[in-house]
Image 1 (cartoon, rainbow, N blue to C red):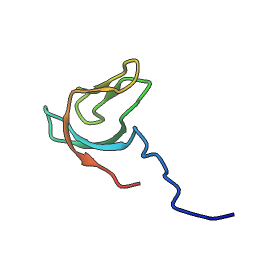
Image 2 (cartoon, one colour):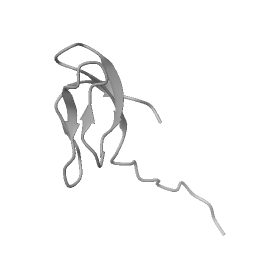
Image 3 (tube, rainbow, N blue to C red):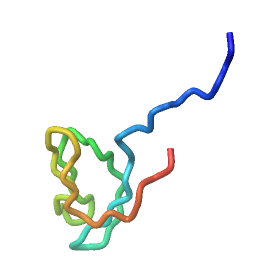
Image 4 (cartoon, rainbow, N blue to C red):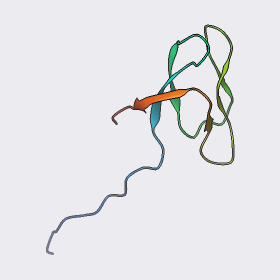
Length: 66
């Protein structure tokens, strides 16, 4: 059996570093969250759940490497 390169699909989800727009606190959240995420410092909503991708309301600083 000949072995070649096997294509592995890239995941559509990621962990994101998000900064609160109200107080500047940073948090790590999942891009496909199933619950609303609030800032631990001031309570501002950082991400709202939706059918697939979460609606990110904070400032996205970047995706974390997997």
